[in-house]
Image 1 (cartoon, rainbow, N blue to C red):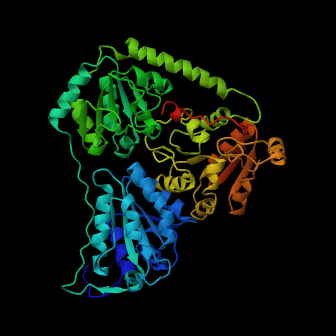
Image 2 (cartoon, helix red, strand yellow):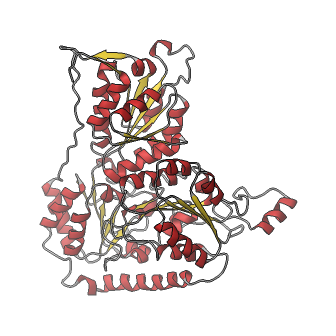
Image 3 (cartoon, one colour):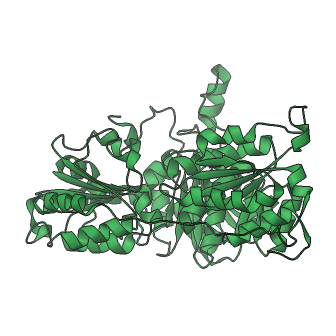
Length: 558
């Protein structure tokens, strides 16, 4: 890059992002980053302007998961960075690559009470792998390259780049002797120690009741080909975590998701593939105390968290699973599917599936969650991307919807934060333009990001958004209960206004909206929405649930 011409800091940043392979930037503009967004667009990069910094940061966060390259988010200084921290933390906790670029006040005015002045580098540092301000305009490309490399290296995570207003508007000349080198970020992939692989293979060969747990780290790592080969060769039943669904097809005969508790208790060897022993796996407390644990992860700090690990295999998951495939002689038993262990789990799963089927057939109106989800489920094509957000909405949907391909189920993931739904859906539609994206979100969760409907309409994204409306957080009240409670005392803290007309918000921003109450109305609306080339919101009124005790599957025994 040496032409003897002057470039603004905004232009230099935009060219640096293009050099990193960036095709989409999510953000909200204002002083001082308007020029940055314009420079980004001038480089041919798509800029998607949101209505709230949390949502655009969530969109960039999940873009990193879906594409295995850092999602980029651009926000204004001060409050903009504060709001976007939600996405930074989400990326860091979930181990997804993200680069946040924040405007900042002029360097000469720091400490003088400048407009939206904040210690942004320091603010982001505890929640990011890398947080820095370029030492000068000329060093913007080097700082951007380091931010991208940190975001993808080892365990992925978040990076922050601070861009003061005088950098954005200032100029730099790349005359001879003053050139700026634009370098692409680097990614290094490693195998596990061969001796450790042999130890793991010995344990697997001698296992009597092994279980493979597939985490969302496996989906991020693009390990589906290797893991499917491993499961087929070894013959062990497998259990996906919610966002690990589809790495091995849910229709695979060794899937024991419907016998989850029995599988966790009964395994004498557990193979963790990109899955952490945290709240999603009950901190390991449901494993047999005598079970041997083989854990494969890119991050060594994850080994031995909460329970001891028999063999720790550090490395890039596809490469390490290839090593295991080569090291094991074959199936753990002559005919794995007919062993009492596997056949018992499959029978348990069938009984649980039959009970689930009874809930699907319930014809009460207002509908319950299971009937509503069934009406949606049976209409979705195999290539759908489903965004699931909410408390009951997400917890119950985990057991209902099936996936045959990886990275097709998106939910609140490890950090379990509400408000991700619309940002995730928008990013998913951009990442999978040929696939339908359906967001099934609770009414409370939808309230965090409802105005991003306008973002999606403006971006011409044909999303299908189904709001599961039960009038509350966890549980709500019907109109009669609500009025009666309000007359005699305070409303429950979980109550929302009954029967809010969310579909009218869709009408207000130029989309279509339907209000449905029955299974037939819901099914018809979903069919219609999947054929429409624009955004459709379906406001699905279900049974509120009343004042029940809060209890979720993941809470038990934790």
